[in-house]
Length: 402
Image (cartoon, rainbow, N blue to C red):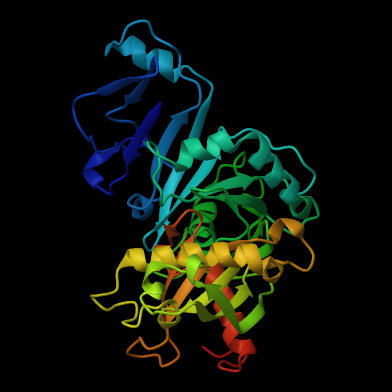
């Protein structure tokens, strides 16, 4: 079952003590029979009154049922809704976005994960509950660009008093180790929630009068992330100001090394140049996850990222083949110094340093592919950390420079 509603800030929709009534999508109830089970869309539901009005255009609430009662007859009478609503196997999520990249935050219904550490819980989720990831990330409830965040109330760092809450990140292919855009979304969400079952440490968060922000310590699989969330005078997340975070130590493992790619393993735009062997300069850098960083021109696309003749599929093909080649031939470049679970290539960042911002000579354009061809619709977060570490090591940027 999916019961979904979009919140719209509209004073005329307030009900005394009950919060905001959801805007109706369609006065009719839609129902479909799938594999002898019923998928029902509810036309309206009430929103929690605890959400501040200025945030109501940001959050989307949905419920997903893992087990749906089998019905002998498809009926649109209320007994259908009552039968399905009575199930205890509901997963509730909140959908947010950072720029264009979504974050589906799982707030209840996800099973407890076994393990003493966050990485052990991550392995347990991969081994035992990947069906839930697929249910929430993929069609029909999700899409190939969906991204998820599973809140973990207890980790080794929360028990030690070093973190406020833990999180696991997931996407269309599996599980990541760090995500900047989801961290930003989580920062605002965790400041705005006062559900102590969901976030037991909420009341211990401290407001800094110097920065007018609440500091949040988020335990991600890559380590501890320090998130700063600007707040209003009422203590709510301030939507007019940006959320920021300090990530884990970041570092390059390869700087402009030459890859020798044989013709049979090359991608279409590269093979337009008649050669038996192609030399591609690439870098590899870590920012909570490992990324291959390569220029658009090196991939055989001379017209750069924003030229009309440059097709998105050209870059997608190149990123997929380049990642496969490096995984097969240079896997050692994705080795984390302390954690085996962090030792894998997460994505490919294709950059174009010829495209500059009008007010920043150090800027460069880029497009990031990760998971199964997923395009990051935000400016990325973990890859920004990786790129900064790379340019600092190259001497192109100094400490505390932008």
